[in-house]
Image (cartoon, rainbow, N blue to C red):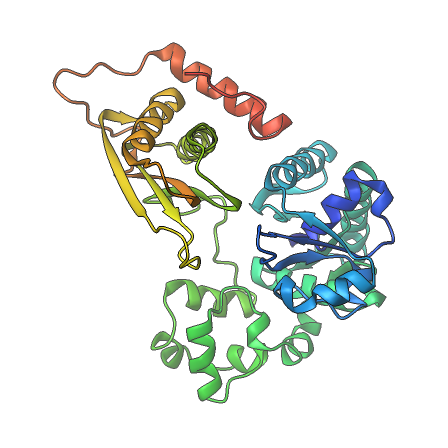
Length: 393
């Protein structure tokens, strides 16, 4: 059976886990900006009880936050990735879950080698309790005949306390569960597809399951049809072979605008290194490194500037020092004094397979020691957190 593990209110749970003094208090995680803007990204149960919700702009609830002493934590993606890696390693070390794979920073999938509902619940509970004991992160678990149905089960594990965080969705209970589930809560159904389904009177997951395949072929892409099949209990999604990205981007909208070239350079180095690591993870190389800078377009009282520069590399590579050096060079070509910058980023393009890369006539293959160094660096950063090791150029 397929297992889905979803971390509850993950960003907020990470903040409470690393700052025990926040336990039991209303806490929200937000991308707060220098002018009081930003939105709520995650929140604890205590914050939800006050009427706060994810996605609400901070300025709309500023008085409510102040009156109830709600604690605002700035978003810290490095922390969240580090804890996510820790969860991944701990589950693998426990050796209960098979075919374990990380889907996102707060979601994981795997399989359990049994169809007995009592055994499934027992093993999933062991995994759930181990994660809580080792990281203090609460999770919900769903189990069923496909990845998509496992996510449906997790939905019920999250929203119904009687499941105690673990829901096993067996075939005999599937129709009832899908009849109660709006298609808006189905993994893989986008907004456009949802609107088309609503217009046809298809509003629940069970109505979708009962729909004619030929009709759905006019609405869905291949991935949408796979979702339909998975809801019928037919596994057809392969998470172990994700589609390789044709471009890789890392960017950030700064909480506070800056005109400091050294600050921007440090950020660009970090983004470029992260892009290079992602490139190696999918066993690819790139030929072009692009950097962009932008001021705050909402501040009409300030001078505006937005531009990008692409650097064409001599040969395809996934080497961090080479990519970082090209990105820093592009930044210095872009940067202009007299502007306050709000956003910066790095984009890798012209991506090809590592095995089939073509070198220029006069280029030499990358030194094997460099590749070995990259492998060691990636392994250390994955275990201890991003940016544990950086490259000084």
